[in-house]
Image (cartoon, rainbow, N blue to C red; front, top):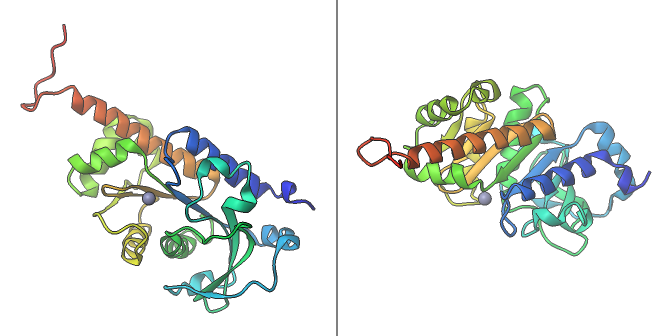
Length: 254
Ligand SMILES: [Zn+2]
C-alpha cells in the first residue's frame, strides 16, 4: 500500500481543488474534515506515527471516541492540497474519552489542524448520531453571494430558505429541509460550533452570517453539490434583487 492508493485522501484533495477553482477559497480561507471509515483507518495505518502525543480538546465529543479524521491544516491553502497533502492535511485520532486528539500523519512541516476544529467535531458528533453514521463530511468556505445576502436578508432561516427555493426548482429538491442560519459569531469560537451543531440536527447547510456557509454530506459529491446549489441560487437572487429600484419597480434598461 502506498499513500497514492488511499482513495479518501485523493477524493478529499480533489474536492478541495475543485472548490478552490470555484473561487470559494481566497488565500487560506475555508476548512474541511472527513470522518474515515474503519477500513480506511486500518489501510492508512502504515502512515501513522504511533508515538504522536495526545493534545487536549477544548470540547468533549464522546460520540466520536476512537474515530479517525482527515482534516485541513490551519493556514493551509485549498489550492495546494492536491499537490502536497502531507503538508496541508492531517489524519487525527480522537481519544477513547473523546476529549483529546493526536496527529497520526500529515502537517509534515508543522502546524495545527484547522482553527474551526471544534466546530467540525461538534457537527460530526451530531450528524453521526442523527444519520446513523452515514454523514462523514463537514465543509466550510466563503462563497461571496451567500455572504452578500447575509448582509441584506434578515437573519431568519424561513426567509433564506423561501427566497432561495424560489430561485431554482433544483433547490427544494437539493435541500428540502431548508437552510439553517446563525447570527454573526467569532470565527473559530466554540460558541459558533455549538450554534451550528444545534442547526445540524435539522439541516445539512447552515449560513454563517457575514462569514460563509457550513455544509455536511455523506459523500464528497453530495457536500460539494449542496454547497454549489446554495451558492448558485444565492447568486441568482443577488442578480434579481439588483435589477429592482428601491421602490420595488423593475429597472427599465431599454
Ligand atoms: Zn471561515
